[in-house]
Length: 153
Image 1: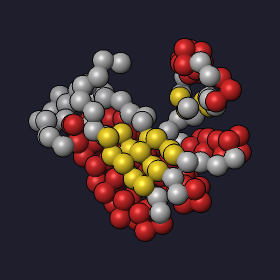
Image 2: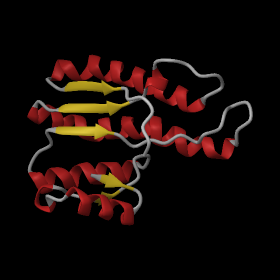
Image 3: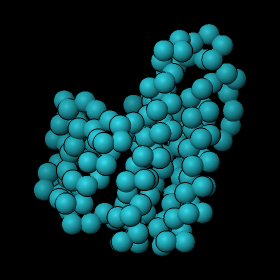
């Protein structure tokens, strides 16, 4: 389990229990070195990688027509680049185990909203999942796209 905020990550791990079966690592999904290190440390800790889940993402809550462009880059990097970085780091390990890559998109990636950049990032994840599926399934790796609706987090 990775997260950018060490305090929140620790709280999650404490609540989840099973400390002997979980590994918590502070990492930013949009940072290649952090992502590659997290995958490598996970493989070292558990001996193999059977699955990787790209779940990091957030919504800036504004629109292209009236929003603050300063908020867009972190969202696009986390929502789009983050899953691609995880896939790049994890695919060789998943190939070794016949594992599965899970990408968490959104219903916003299936239905457009006016001037909504978050929706565009989730459309990108839909495309990434389809693209990766073409590549990964020939190597015995499963690729799953999950598109949840609104969730109160």
